Figure 1 (cartoon, rainbow, N blue to C red):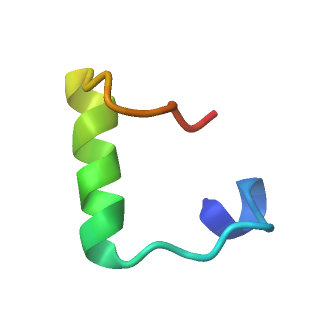
Figure 2: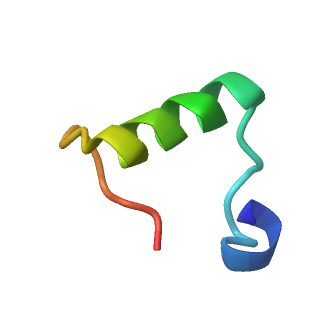
Figure 3: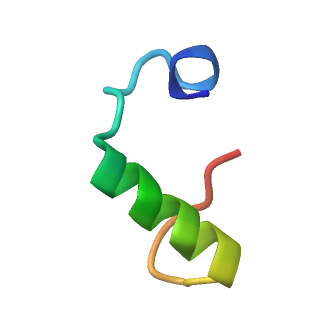
Length: 35
């Protein structure tokens, strides 16, 4: 997904990816949403 939707950004590590998914899923308001 990161390579196809956001080619300019570095690919996240698994830890960062998991954290971002958890925040997106559970509605954390600590950052911008992807897409």
